[in-house]
Length: 310
Image (cartoon, rainbow, N blue to C red):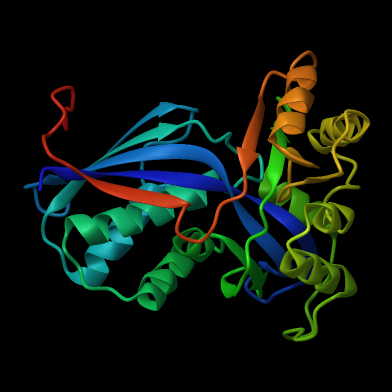
C-alpha cells in the first residue's frame, strides 16, 4: 500500500453545559455533539526512516511540529503499536481553526484511524478511542461520529440517533482561545463527577431522539454564549442575524467563535447562507452526519509525485 487518504468532518455542540473545574485543571462538561459535513483531508504515507514524523500543512495556518495533534496522534499510536517505521502526513485544512468546530481533534482522530489502516493494526474501536482520549477530549467523538452525549471532559460517550439537520455555519474573523474562554467562565472546583444530567442537556437529548429539527432548534444551549470577550461579541451578532434570516434556532459551537443555525430544509439553508455572506466572509451550509459518514478512509494506489519528506 502506497498510503491512505482520510477525509474527516467537523462538529457542532447542540448543547454544552460546563460544570466544575477538575483537579487536573480541565472542566467536567455535559454536551451533545453532532458531526457535520465540513471537511479536512489527510494523506498518510509510510517512511522507512525509524520513528520519523513529517508533517506538512496547507490551507488554514496551524503548526507543523510536535504541538500539532496529528503529530501527537502519530507518536501515540506508534508507541502503542511499537512501530519502527515513520510516516509523512499532509494535512489539507479547510475547517476553521480555533472556532469551536473541533478541526484539530478531528484531524487527530483521522491520523489514528488512517495509520491503523496503513500499519494494518488490529485495534478495536474502544481501544482506538482510549488512545484518542490521551490526545484530546473530543478525539474519541470523531472516531465514533454521528451524534453523542459527552460527559466528564467530553470523552465519555453515549451514542444517540443522529437527527437530519441542515445547518448554516458562520465563523467570524475574530477567534476565541479555548483556554481563555474556560477561564472566563470561572466555574470553581468540581465536587466530583455529576452523574445526573442538567435540565438543558436532558431536553437536548430528548429533542435529538425525537428526530424533529424544530424540536432540536428550540433547545440549543451553550454556556459560553454570554461571555463578554472578543470573538463571542461578533458570534452573538451572527446568531441574531441567522435568526432574523429565518433559521429555526441558532447557537455558538464549542467555546466559539463559530455559530450555526438550523434551517427547515436545504433550500432555506442555502438562501440564509447567501444573505449572510454580505456580512461575513466564512459562511457554509452543512448537513448533519450519521456515525459512519464522518470519516472516509481510502487507499492511495500510487505515491503522490509532489511529496517531499526532506
